[in-house]
Structure formats: structure tokens, C-alpha cells
Image (cartoon, rainbow, N blue to C red; front, side, top):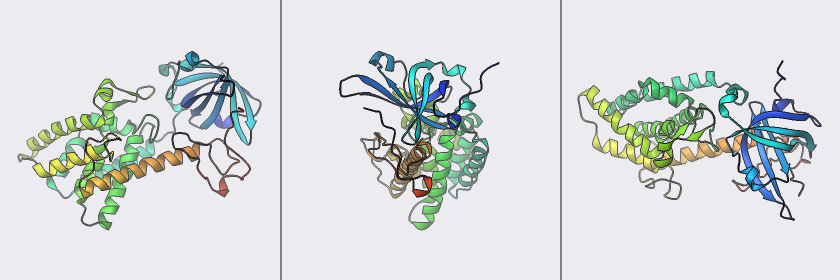
Length: 336
């Protein structure tokens, strides 16, 4: 009879552990003597626990990376109010052998509601060309299926199945609301741009097993990929309506897509140069950053502290509020 799964929320101080987790963060560091040690974040659908492994080599650490499933062995210990695992072994696991439901929340009901709302907003656009174009995309069942289970990122924001849909649905609601606050914005153009800006990620990122970039995703990226799809759907739209698509409107829509990262340094071939493009960029960045922040706060394993662990990629830790714990805790210490 198989042993019951050791979910993160069930881990207890002093417990021996032998289980598979999703590796969400990996840091290889050196102590004062130059000896290497490994810090990891291990996740399942119930939470995240920090892991620490001493006396590891670069070759050992190179055998797995963030986004991989790993089997770990070790012991759970309590350190400054938070559970952490002291690892004696960590090995890469074939993603085809794991049960996805052990690592992801069931978001199916929320996804259904979000998809309904996406259809409501886009199929009700006032501009005939944009409304018909959105229908061409939404009537593509294979595309919509991929969109509904796609991710907005591999590691950072909305990095879960259905994350792309959640991201776009949130931005559509936000775009709809700010268009009433800024009446000079072309609401229909903004909402169409919101829907399309990251849609190329359904081709850029594979969600079969662990999330990974496809060959065309690596070589072209989601901006180029959605521009390819856009040309196909515009041609389909013209065939449906029997009239040419507004050229200036299409040009502005393409501009929203290519400029939504906001700068050349962050991957946009053009900076935003229209009011709608500026609005899309800032809405996109706001939702991504807030999602990332809340993910850090909600997944922080130290429930006794009002502060999260320090997050190197963001250059800060986050205040969780006094109702989340007392002020005595601190982030996981490496012991070095």
C-alpha cells in the first residue's frame, strides 16, 4: 500500500521526509570557507517550504533547475518560527510520472467564469472590425482551449495553468474601467490589445508537464508569434465580413502588441507611442507585479513573522501586516 503524500501543510518539526515537490527557487551559495550549499523553495498545492542542503557540488546542483520536479530526502526542522527542510538528497524526477493535481490548485470554476467574462467583453465591442476580429479568435476552439490552460510566465507572474486567462481577464476588467475614467482612450482598441498582447504565449510556452519554452518560443517569442496569428485572423475576418479591415486601426492594434513591455530593454521592439499603448503597458505591469508580490506573501513559510523572506530578484522583503503573525520572526537563515 503506497504511503500517503507528505503535503507541505502537514509537515511537522522533526519529521523525516521523502517526497516529490516542485522546485520554484534555487540558489547556490558559498559560505565563508568557500564551501557550497544550496537553498531551494519546494512547492505543492498546499504551500511552500524552504530547503537547505550542505556540501553540494556545482555538478550536483546543475542536475535540476527551477520548474523541475524533484524528489528530496531529509528532515524537517523549526528555525525562527518557520519550518524548513535539511536535505540529504535531491534528484530530478520525470514530470510525466507526477500527478499534476498534487501541485496545482483546482481553478476550473474560476476559469469558467473568467472565460465567460472575456467573451462578454470582447463580443460586445462597438467597433465592427474589432468585434468581428475578436470573434474570429474566440471561435477558434483549439486556441481558446490552449488559452484557458496557458501560463503568463514560467517562473514569475501567473506561472500556473490558467494563469494567462486570469491575467487577461483581470486586465480586461481594468481596461474597461479606466476607459470610463479617461474618455479619450479608445476602449475597443484597448480591450482588443489586452486580449492579444500575451496570446502568443500559448505557442511560446508548453504546459505539458513542467512549463518550458517551445522551439518557436525560444527563437521568435510571443510578440512575433501573435503577430503571425493576427495576420491569419484578419484575413479570416475579411473573408467573413466581405470588407477590408481598417488599416489604421490594425496598425494601432499591432503597436499595442509590440510595445506592451514598455521599453527596448525589456523586450519591446517599440516603446508605447499611443495613449492606449501606454495604458496597456502600465496595466500589464501592475497586474504582473501585484500577482508576483502576493505570491511571495502567500507562499512565505514563516507564519510567525510579519515579514517575508528576502527576495533576491526583487531586492526586498515584504511586510505582511500585523494580523499575519508577530514581529519576532525572520526569514530562513542559511546558518552561515
